[in-house]
Amino acid sequence: MNRSASAPGWHADLALVGIALIWGATFVIVKQALDSASTLVFLALRFAIATLALAFAFRGRYGRLRDRRRELRGGVLAGICLFAGFAFQTFGLRYTTPSKSAFLTGLSIVMVPFIGSLVYRKAPQVSEALGIAAATVGMALMTLEGPSLGIAFGDLLTLACALAFALHILVIGWFSAGGSFEALSLTQVATAALLAVSVCGWAEPPRVVWTAGLLTALAVTGLLATALAFSVQAWAQQRTTPTRTALIFALEPVFAWITSYLVYGELLAARAAGGAGLILAGILLVELKPIARRKHP
Image (cartoon, rainbow, N blue to C red; front, side, top):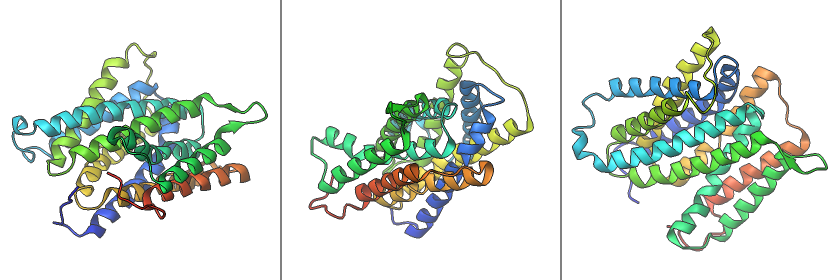
């Protein structure tokens, strides 16, 4: 897939590092905000703020919508995946720790080549298979609890989140090339907002207590971690390769652990730290493909 060379690649890479930092930091912010608002109400407010911000920022910049049917279709599909991912992730944060949630969410990067192999009917390469195996073992070390080998409810929700985000990456990768990143970004965020609003009244009891912490979380997640982040992702993937994008996003759980340590003083046990290392190693194997013999479609 050809990428635009209209801007230096390091500009896009640096922007993606900033987005990974923002996403990593929001795990702690969202967990604190859920003390003041129910999950779906928080998501509805977050995506609504992002939609209004993008509609204002991109006014008149994506041309006539009737000429952007491809981006609109892609945006709707991406928005469905986005809402599912954030819903599972935010529900999961109620029952797991921020750093653990971040590492499990990172499995979406490992899932992408596996799902892609089903779509393209081509088996994963050796590096991809080894990466998936390493990340799976790492996930087990981080999530399996005690002699019962049980997995916490929040961990299962976060794994569902990872699957949704993997599908989101594939959809954005397909529809971002050669189109309007503004239209794609606005449509996906607006779709997620509509889905959140449509279910927040019946899927769970709505609750909101307006506090300074909640307002701060909505501002940070709505403007920075949603409106800015997904616009930058669509823009950057026109100027850098998907491999480098995914590799940079692998920094997100590292930033999440640093933030969790600074806020909560949370330390990873040796077993969990080893699992986290295996997850990151799996991500690197999948994206760098040191044993690859052919290019993956």
